Structures are given as structure tokens and as C-alpha cells.
Image (tube, rainbow, N blue to C red; front, side, top):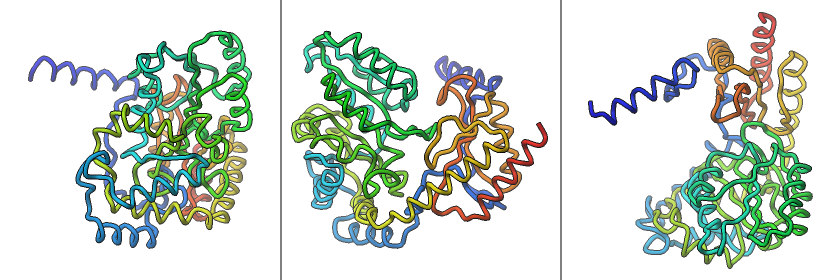
Length: 386
């Protein structure tokens, strides 16, 4: 084993005492009653209409785009999907990417480019932003001015402190935080953007499909055609497929075409994926009753587990954390639930802050009342042992 290989092995083993070593889960779950670990919020991943649309688009254009979109991979369905996203998000343009992480890390790095901007920008960022957003800032080599999670009073204090600084100002945040299930106050953020001349870069991964006008996210219609900034969202959660988008102004779209390495050097989305996404995107306005029922189920579940003594943090959405503190406790509760046929994710640092390890309950339109009851009963049993 080379010296590098041994160092890698030492690092992995060093994670074991703190219960932070990760491994791929099983591909089979015999006896599983319900899965509360996935992000298939609307149940569209198995939707027959999406499967048929994927097949039809692949039949027409093949299974691969054959190249980057700046070369051979810019096909009619790609352009149609870009236009549909822009129309729904209230922006002038949109671009699709192969994943949300890729879109966040590379688009944000391009937008924060110090050489292009003429100075290192001031980046105001929520402390609990997704790792991909932090990575984008790191790639750009910029310092983040982090404000307390979803604390707009603290954010305003920072903005006022730097109000007379002439450097470009950016605000980076999620509209629904994926590990906490709470929401960004979009009217307040839009007002701050106008007051302090901020460029907004907002992550709608967990809002797209579930929240906002017709399910198109909380930032939809708040971006002033893209003049307030750019919005990223994914197709891999409520949309049920894979990939991501950035909705923005024509100016930003053209800039990303020339500066964003994640777009420039990546093969376009598979036509099969684009076909399925188009079908899901068109279907979202008709799913209001599904969204309403999902959020009502989440509210009832939060009330039930809070009555059992669980800390659900600031969740107000379909993502409900059960914050238990220690990593070992989160893993123990995960195993306890799995023994009862209930699959849920144990989330540990560094994904969440120290001492806030949790079970992340991801609720879906697919979950039945009996499955929700089974989960509540198992949590009640666990609580009674403590």
C-alpha cells in the first residue's frame, strides 16, 4: 500500500470513534414497511407519465446528449426546458445542469470571480447553507460573512456594517433548508436586496415542486426577471428525476455560458432525463391538492412527535428533523426504527452543526396514514425507554 493509500485508510478509521464513518446503505431492505429517507416528495419518481415521457424523448433524440451544450449537445428539448423553467420562475432565462451540487459550486464560483468583479465581493451567507454553496465560495477564494441561521436581524446588522463598502455584495441562502425544514422569508429578502443592492443566489432544491405559486418554488416571481440575481433548483427531489437548473437574467445566462466551468465542460442532460423533467414540470400546477395534503401531514406529524418530547427545531415544511444531539444517539434511533421496518436517515456533523445530530424525516405524498402511525408508534416506544 502506498503512503497515500495508508493516509486515506488512517483518515477513514479515525472517523469511527465519533460515529462519523459513512458507508453506502444496503440496496435491499427486507421487511421494510416505509421509507422516510428519500426526497421523492411528490411521488413522481415512479409516475407512469414521466416514465413514458422519458421513453418518448429518448426514442426521438437518443439516450445521450453526445456532448456539451456549447458543442453537439444542445438539443430542442434542452431549449424547451430552459424556456419552461424561466417562465415559471419569472426570469428571462434558465440553464440546466447535471446536478444541484454542480450547479451551486460552479455557477456560484463563476459569479463570485474576483477578476471579473474587480474586487473580492462581500458574500453574506446563512450559517447552515448546503455544502455545495460553501464549496462555490471556496472555489472562488472568497471570505463569507456568515449570519446566524435564518436570522434576518443579524443579516441586517452585517449589511448595515458594510453599507458604504463599494465592493459587490451577494446574499447566498437556501429557500428551504434541507436539514432543518424551515423557510427563507422571501418578501423580506427581496426588500433587503433592493435596499442594499444585493445579488441574490438562492437554492430552491427543497422548495421546487412543493412550495410557492403552482409549486415552482418560494423565489418564483420575486427575482424581478432575474435582475435581483439567480435561483438554483433541482430535478432530483420533488421533480423525481435528476439534474438542476439556474434561472437568471439574460446577462447572467450569457456570462455563465462563458465562465461557468460546470456548464461549459459537461455533457448536456440525457434526453431521457429532459423528457421526464419536462413532464413533471408541466404537471406541477395540477398538484396543488397533493402539496396541501403533504404539508398538512407534516404539520400533524410535527405536533405528534413534539408531544412525545422530540425537538423538531424550526421546521415548518415536509422535512422534519428529530434532533437528538449525539451522533451515537442518532445512529441508535436509526437502527431502532429499521428493526421495526422504518427507514430514516441519521444526519451527523459535519452535515449539521456539532451536538445537533438528528433523524431527518422526509415526508412524501406516497406515505400512507398507517405508515405515519407506525413511525409515530415506534418513536413513542423509543421515548418511553429514555
